[in-house]
Amino acid sequence: MSESFGELEARYRATLNRLSEACRVLRDVKGDPQPLASGEEPPALTKAERDAQTEAMRAFQEYVPVRDLYWATRWGREGNPPKS
Image 1 (cartoon, one colour):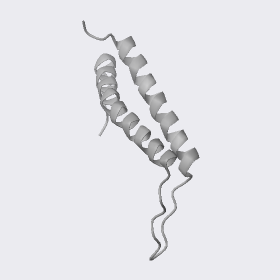
Image 2: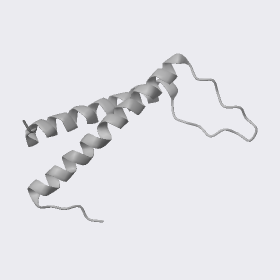
Image 3: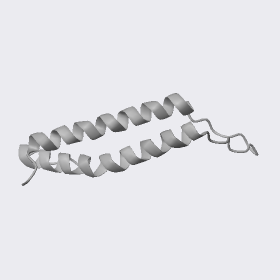
């Protein structure tokens, strides 16, 4: 059985919320990225930082195809194609 638009929208919102939460956790753990000074060594990553980066990456990888499907379906339903 095919997924209804309402189910797709719920899945889109869930993946977007997961991505937003993962990015928030990553910011809380790592802080804002700072450029390295000339000759400065990159800082070592803690396990918490690596885990937060991994979760953010996985959340993003799950989100992108759902986002694309959601917007392609919504634009088709509403007759409102994206503007380039």
